[in-house]
Image (cartoon, rainbow over all chains, first blue to last red; front, side):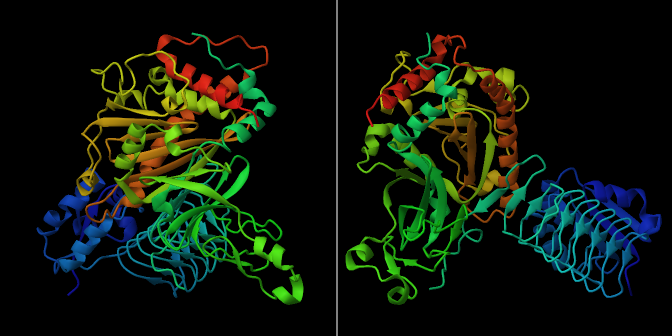
Length: 221
Length: 367
């Protein structure tokens, strides 16, 4: 039998939005149990203790963290939740429009007025904030944050731990490798290598250098 | 004290040209972290003294070459960092680990070089010295010994502290509109901090220690000797603890800010021996500089899952501090004229005076 209640744990603007208006995500107040942390480090350290108080057969879980999806530490929270046997919910705002062929993993947030085109795929623990729009056949990997008003053109692929700031525009057939952060509006195209950060006020992007970023220790002859 | 430098040293394009020849082509210039090129065929590209330089890890040895194919001068590598063999992208010429041309596609059919010309084909190589995790390049055909530029204590210190660098680093360039020397002088001058960085940097400096503890402060008389222009100090600083600090091996004592000045154009700092930042002021023209940031965390004891976020956060903070300086320094540059008044340094600015004199001594050297 499907769990009756949703346990919402985390911190940040999305947590607060869900907390304020659970009905817009199809949740009754009586179905929602909340645990809010003071900061993301606390979530990593204490989430296990919080989860131990709940029976995975009686609650479904949703973990809502801040926009700093670069932060790999959140993996500890999701991993622990799955280890404890929790099933993870998706929270989809009633105003969002998703093509029937969209595939979603779990612990995904789809905010108000989001539109997702056909054959797009979104992996776990990724957040699409209000009014973001994905074209057709867009692939979003896990632990991504797409800010409000982001657009992603058809056929683009976005790897894990990517952060797109509000109103960022990603062109068609664009490839963003893992840990890319873009806060300038664009539009942006081409291939962005892992660990590239383009902050709002920067002229040039910062790049991450070293093993698994700009070189591998196993160079093919 | 009056500065030996005049306004013309900050605005003259002719003096800028002389700097490229007499400073940046003759001194040991910081090129990159060793960890940035620490795999076979990993590379970094830099522009030093108006030349394109390639730092390539060739079969385990870090070498510096002119980044220019002898055929038609196409750069061999174009990305700032990467990993690929030395193959010219224009016509496919392949270079060996010594920078010599190994293979030319359709050589006999198309090129028909005579034997002597063929033997001469290769990448011009420059001298490399590695101090700990820091790679220095010298473009001179007869480079001065590195010990003539850096005192043994500094070399020992850089070897020691850079041994704590983690493998992964972040890099960013910020173009600014002022002469590179204004930024180097700015970092030499700690008294600007309370006025320019009252909210970002000043709160971190502990009030109990009014002066820096320096390793050359017995005689605060300006010294123009070359090896005296590079030095280091440590200051008390309150470092906010974060959980990730437990996952690394920090350099030195807790709550300490380490500051190094590497002549002619590098300031290298470390916050608590936990985060390391090299900022380099790369001359572009008399009134333009490319500020180059290279930042890494201390070597991890175990995997730090949040490392990209940590590096990004620290880099963002350092750029914020720089931009507070940029606003002032650009104003300063804009106001400089040939007939601007002379500068009057206070006693605490003996380092700036020494820097100016050493700089002029180098410019006075015959071509």
